Structures are given as structure tokens and as C-alpha cells.
Image 1 (cartoon, rainbow over the protein chains, first blue to last red):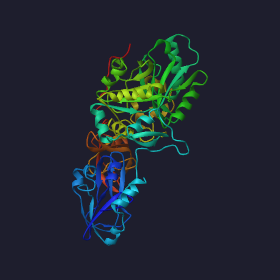
Image 2: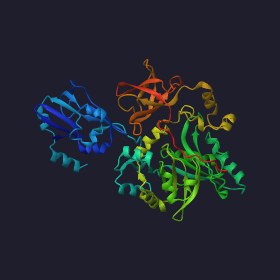
Image 3: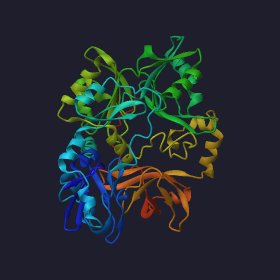
Image 4: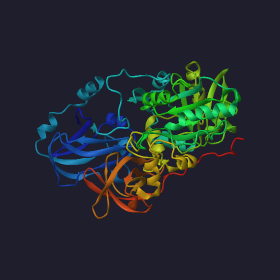
Length: 121
Length: 399
């Protein structure tokens, strides 16, 4: 699993990246009440808004950590957005993306680097 | 993840952050703190906004609202005749507000509005007449945090040399709200349970004098307790020692007042909005409307007679994301009607709700509208306010 400074995680299997928000991000957001996800087929570009996650008090953009094409969105989050709080780095995943360049994933932080980054916040 | 909206609309740039007498207590409870109205305030505690909100509806939420502006307006020279002294102090504040202050009974508290010459709202506030005969000629005033400096200046200027405004915002103002608030507060300040909605009294706590009102901003029964800094932490700690009580931050305070249909000054009301537009016509005194003796009375009388162009309504968002402040409100035929002024997710209803302005022709409950969220149209309908019924505890009016 790889991580971004925007607190997204990326798990690459073959050329498909599963993307979600980190446990730290979920804790910071508080209770998630709504998740807006892109549809399959949408082209996404690293650094651009990919999804929106809403807590009781605020809406936050989820930034695409890598470029590619959306192949699936987690429909479960429509009915149970709190899964993002319960299992942020598991069942609370947001989208799957067919990545354009797997090297983009490798360039992100590993868990040790992300945890070191969190310690600076 | 990048936050693009927040419960804190503004802090005060260029000013040092201020602290309430309870800031240390919030930090000890591991609250998430944020600047609000120039103060370092708790948005939420570890339980989170959703749980804090639902706890308040079911039990008793305890809120630090010491950033607000409590004060006492005191007649400089009292005649000793309680009724005459009350009339004299009421006559100093009535020119600024649209409420009946003269007609307050001893111990009664009234929600009223400070208005500008154009009939726009400068703020909303509470004005109370003390119960004690020896305190007649005084008024208890509580204004909003973000507007308190301007409000206090306005009230002091209105009083001139005839009265002095004594600020009381250096102590604690603690709200206890919810169906178990009465039991929690009565245990610490006996006598609280005898108060009816919108009355207040001085009650003793550990030998100090508290000013306790039966009022609040959640739609629930509850109390707002003003105490000196010397007892602030003790009062807070002892309230929270009650198993029916839990600390609640500004995040849930906002979602609770939204469900209760209560406007938030600076968002749902501002200097351009009249009391009629904000749907607060109940706060306009009939005697004073007849006399037209408050600022902007002509405009307000005209609006009550049907010249209204916009009015605050509740909106149920029937699909999609919560519609937050600034979201456009559009008619089914695509006509732009107004904007959402407060909105979010209702923990009690598990659905998005909002308030905003529309022309009166679109204001009837059930009217179909759309709201636009991030460029997408979502179905909505005008809803009766409040979204969640008020549960105020009314008692026979004080004699």
C-alpha cells in the first residue's frame, strides 16, 4: 500500500489501483455521511479532484493520487458511508482505477514514510 | 483530501486568538479546537458530531458558549419605583429593537432583534427583565459572539449617560440542552426546575451567583448558565460528572439548531435581511408595529402587508449530497430563486436538510425545487420548520 500527503491510499494489483482515504483522514473528517464517486469509464488525472467525502460539518475533495481510468466505484458507500470511518483502509475503499503508469504508484510514500509524514503534522 | 467548507465561517484576522475560561477543560477532554468568532473553540470532542448531536436529543448536551456576549444594562439612577425603573431602562433599548421590552414581566426573557434604519438585522439577541425587585432598572442581554463588539457599542450609545453596559463575557456561559437537562441542572443549582421556558433567575452554586435561563439554541428543553470565572471549571466539571451529561462542540450545536429551524446570524440573516424575510415576524411586537416606533418599521409593515420579495424557508434535499451554504436554489422550470444559507446532514433524520431564501410564491411547504451541488441538480422540497419538533417546557407565566 502506498500513500499521499493528501491522505489517500493506493493498493496496486496488476495495473488496477484501489484507492481510499487513510485512517488518519477518516479520523480527521469525523462521521462520514455522504460520498460522491465518479462513474466507471471516467478518465482521471493525478492531482485533480476524484471524489467528494462529506462529514456532518464539511465537504472535502479526494484528490486522484494517480492517472488512469475509473473501472469501479464502491457502491456500498451509497447506503453505508460510515464504512469509511469503520474500515477506511479496507471495505471503505472509494474507486478502482486502471492506471496509466504503474510507476506513478511506486513513486508514492510507503507506510513508513507516510507515518513519518504524519508525525510532522 | 482538502476541506473546502467548514463550520467556522470566519475568525478575526489580525487579532490574537481569544480563549474562554474553559479552553483548558476542552483540551483536557481532547476536543478538536478551531478558531470561531475570534475564540479558540471546541468543534467536537472524541465522540464526534453525530454522537454528540444524538446524545443531546436523547439526554443532556453540555456546551461552552462563553464566546457569546452576555451583559447587564443598568440604569445609572434608579427612582426606587420598580415599575418606573423598568419602563426607564426599557425605553433606552426599545429604539434599537423590534420587541416589547417594556411589557416583560419580572423574570421573563425575550428573543428580539437589533435592527438598522433600513429594517435589516444587526443581530438577534436575548433581553431579560430580572425577577428581583431591587434589580428593576436592569436588563440581562445576551448577543452573538461574532457581532458582540458592534452590538455592545450600539447599546451603550443608545443608553448614553442614562445607563451603563456591564459586560459579563469574562466568565462562563454554559448551555445544558436536552430532555435530561432539567435533572442535571437542578441537581447543581436547585430552583432551575421551577423555571419555565424563556424565564431566568439568579441561583446559587458553591456560594456564587449564577444567572440561569431556561432557553437554548437546539430546539430542546434546556438552560443557559452564566457564572463567574471563579467557578467556571468547577461548574463544567460537575455538570459533566453527571452520567446523563456529555460535552458537545460547536459542530453539533450547528446541526442541532439547523434541525430546530433556528437562523444563524451571519449566515441565514444579515444587515440586508428584515425580520419578515428571516421568518421571524413573531419577534415583532404588535404594540410597536402599531406605533411604528422601531428602526425600519415602514419597510417591515409593508412586508407584512405583502411586499415581501424573499423569505427564509426550510428545504428537504430528496437526493444526493448535502446542499451547503451558497448552493443555488432553482425552480423546476430552471428559474434561479435564491441560495442556501445553511445546510448539512441532519443526524436525527439521517437526511440532508437546508435553509435558504426563495420568493414567497415558492415558499409553501411541499413546493418542489432543485438545489445545485457542485453543478448537479438535486430534487428538494420546501419543508415546514422546524425539521425536528421543539420540546420547550412551558410553565404558567410568572405573575
